[in-house]
Length: 403
Image 1 (cartoon, rainbow, N blue to C red):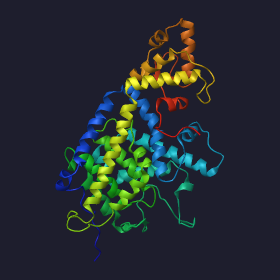
Image 2: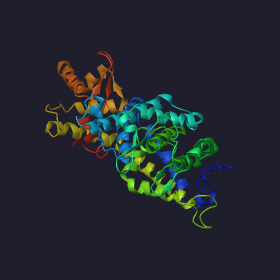
Image 3: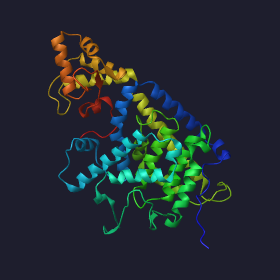
């Protein structure tokens, strides 16, 4: 008789364990902070930031997996400017593949029933691998020899081990994935337990290790989409992967600890350690809170206004790399107003320049040519943008500076 392995319990920490921890409070705090951040942004500014952050999310998620392609290299690839080094070129393409899946998920806007299904999770994997070079589909051993190849969207058909963890046998994967989707569907949980369950699911997905490769990226993309689907509407303007990458040793350590079997009678009643899972959920929620707080503070109107002023001053002191033309100080008010509203009519923009019309049009033309404002036609409103040369002033420490 063949006995199929079951998804390990506990699925989330018990009520008793949660009540003795800060984890439920952290879940509520994350919900509150996310709502505050969403409320302080206009829809158009939110959309601009979401597009901008897709590069940041790709950078940090891929960095966790050993791809150090920097944001400026990713943006260069978006302009079809790839490295001459074939390895770096493939990694640039991998980053673009990750961004493509983020956009696909945004366009799909999957509901919870769709998201928590084996077919859709496999589709995330398929979308990712179909958007990256086939050279990155190859599986190599520690000696660098090719031993297998990814089949996009297909569950693995071989045994694997990840560190000290021996993943479940491939024969059990269909059953495990059905069980995973059933037990972690957020409709199974209420209130603060929804977010806790998503964080617990992040570990259990890694524990199952359903694909021969790409589990980390797919797991984080799945978590991203789940957080958005349960109501963290500001997700996309902030990203969990940034916090995970900045504490990557802790992230991997806590994943590994949560793999352990139950450690005695005071460690829950499940198959795996409840303390380890509780600690992992606490870490994930704290990391999310740190990231949403960072972006909330970064996007405070007064503070961003001061950083726009600093950027204009840096331009006029010739401290902005690659930019040789100074900017009129009135550009600061134009850019600040465009951030608040997301876009400005041409009449509004001309008025904010506070100078003769010919000079104002010249300034607006400069702001457009330098990527600080954008337009869809010669008569369209002017939309706030985040060009690479302004990043260090607009969003200090969000990502590494161009090197």
